Image 1 (cartoon, rainbow, N blue to C red):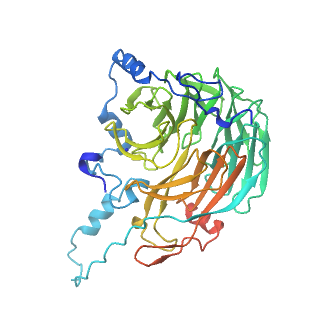
Image 2: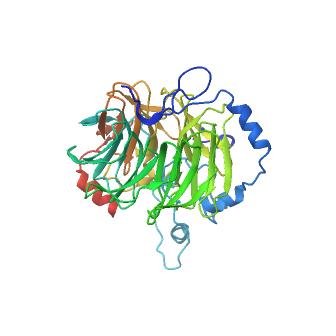
Image 3: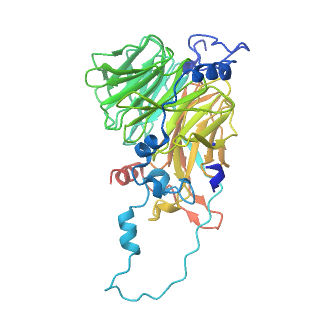
Length: 455
């Protein structure tokens, strides 16, 4: 429970490794840290006017009624973590007395369910086909497909339920480090070391005729806006570009960082963008104006290689090259959680959020807990409880670094990809809670899960 005072083979895939002690990038295909990050950061920030306003961010991320909410968004349940919270009007009408309401005899309160201290994910599929390491993996928003990209310059589309290959997308001239699905699951964006971003018609297996050109160096990270009309990209050229997907033109260029940009993401309503870089900075941007609203930096000033907004948009999760994953309350500028237990000092790793601790037929989703899952440089996939920071599961399978991890839906499915050239699918098994109550999380098919999500 959060306290009020503590509300943390030749071509390597994904350009991610750091070598040497001089703090410089060992090759143009590798993301690294600078030994003088802290000094350079203070030199930069001392000359930059303070433009970020907590109240402006609070209005954008929390809404006008944010002042009524507790700052502990993760306390007790994950309900508010994945949504804006209870519908206040429903809650008030439910609590308000009614003249015509009959007298109800008081009942004994149902004791809260014990929180499980573990998850059980089992590897069910190994997808092979890439000729070099897999840099990123992504479930399509509808959950029916998995996309993977590799240093072999190819993208492969797999059927989630069967693991069968559906498409191989080729057209880039160099390795591909990042991919992103459009919200309708029909278009896939890819960023490559050939400095180009391509959009793909997944069903046809063809690239759109006009690539997105503008970056002067390797593309590291991509994210679609919630409506699918904009795309944000981060590159080795230290810039963040905002693209109009329809015209394939740059809408806005953000002079974001002084080191290669490792990660970018959109908030759930598209009004904010987050970026991170090897300079150790995380920056929050206003999508409409391009203004930097907030700069986050940890006292360790470790290079930040990947970022993600939480599903409710109120937190930012950041991967850093000190073997830590940090959860930030970006409105207040505070690191509220730090997750440790994996190895991450040389490569840029990615991960995702998910939920656990509730059976599929349980109607009360407020009992669900949130987890963070990530790859590790020792070949493991690691799950943490968001609130307690406890390691819920460590599972091996990959040989070498696990670069990309993603979840689908409520987290019942996890996919991972690594430098061993494989993509692996993990399914949550039936769990037995600590109080002895069996929780059946795996009795339905993927089609049933998709139907539930669409409803």
